[in-house]
Length: 140
Image (cartoon, rainbow, N blue to C red; front, side, top):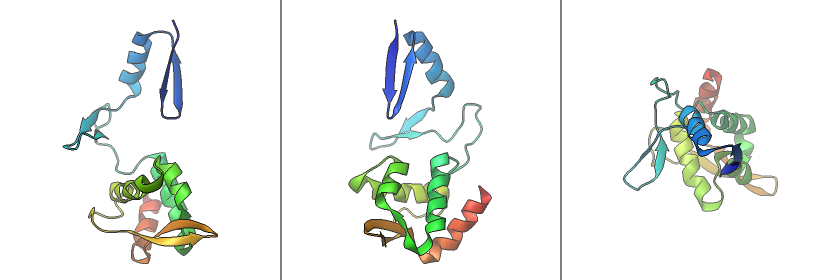
């Protein structure tokens, strides 16, 4: 029996549910729920070591795009695609991302300004935080 499992854009074909359980056990992250019922990845890796904050490839790619773009900014479409959120959900996801990578520590602080990238809407890191972003990128 072949089983196809689709998670987001990822599709996995396994021969049995036991094989799927083994894949989840090996590659899955433990998620904990907050009071709002939203799942968040655990801060520990499988070996019990602390995960590096903002160590994901998408985090690094997005940070590099913002640093390279400087004052011109990055289109909201690119930001949404990298973070996996579109429309109104992209802005809160971007604030969470900024906190996760260490750009800000306060969830109420707005670290981004509106920008125009050609004819499209975009966002840029505030000039006061641009050097912080460059420093974080050098450490990666």
